[in-house]
Image (cartoon, rainbow, N blue to C red):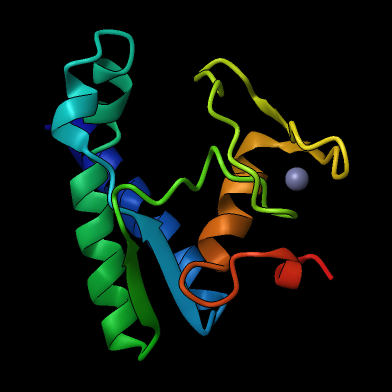
Length: 133
Ligand SMILES: [Zn+2]
């Protein structure tokens, strides 16, 4: 009970922090949580983080604050796509924490999560360099 209270409190604090930055929209990944839970390396950390609860709470707080809330398509390649040139890196592994663009004309080197977050920020608007330029 105490642990789940701490987790819920953390979710509320984190979602409050996001909403307080007054973004014009929030884009989240529609993760295949059930599928990820089958991965024995990921299942513990994923279930502990209560992904679905986090998304649900973030969504209603966005609605309260009139912030557009978008769930990106489950198959949107937010991690594998280069946020600068749009090239897809097919062999990106979970352990690769740095994204190195395979396109020789681009050669972008960027933190994996930052690359994915730029791609999500650009979701359905302009999937190419717009955000970086
Ligand atoms: Zn690139």
